[in-house]
Image (cartoon, rainbow, N blue to C red; front, side):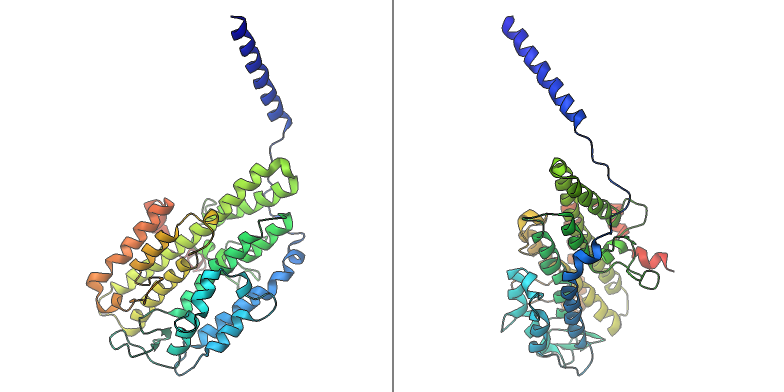
Length: 374
């Protein structure tokens, strides 16, 4: 009996101490707005990186013009230029996919440029088809490069900043790479907002219904909480870690939601009767965009993503854009009866992986920024 009383007393004292410690440790007060005081200064070093990304994007887009040749050398130069180049922040895997001499994406885009393409008479190296440059397999390689770098370069580098010395200034840098402004406009409309959202933040705004519970709003709250917790010190590391985890997941979920949006757009187009060339090209464009966004996550560190590489590979295969062999995106045009069901299967795989509700998947069809500006 004495032993039980002693044990009970020890337990009671321990419980009281825990309760006392919890009361002594204040909860984190999270403000309503992001502190923008040092944002411009803290992100100045990243401006050349994003500028160079835009240089590469413009070089990729040149190939969409009939008869315009884009050299592999010019693409490599845009990717590697400067001491702080895009190449320096990109995953080794995606670098290899871009710069492989025989079948790298840069080489494939260059070979296709200047030519003409048709899904029914594909020729040898691909070419322009209704304003889009496709390789001989109907893959718009420029979209795979552009959208792949959102994760393979920008997200990859943003997460690398969270190791080592993690300070409030680092949050500014991650926010810059995400593409949002401290004002968090929730819009990529540059007519209304001179510092409108861009990069992945622009897509988050397009997927957010403006009710305050969508992906953009959740990510905004994660950024504010992360910044606040880092300013508050080590006692608030639990808040820091939770906010960072939310930020990572929502960045990835925004990508997934945008992939679903692109697939929806392709399905609507390719199910129309009496398709014209513009609609066929746009359908292959949307599928290529979806493949690019997804492909960029391949070989991202497993601790920084939910999706596995095996799951990425399965979905890329459903998009007829497998990572390890030639694409066959053109078959969505030439053999829709057998192929189009793969797109619905891809959406179902993504929905199950991220736990999106049916209502959420339906909402991803919309571009809420465009809807609000009509």
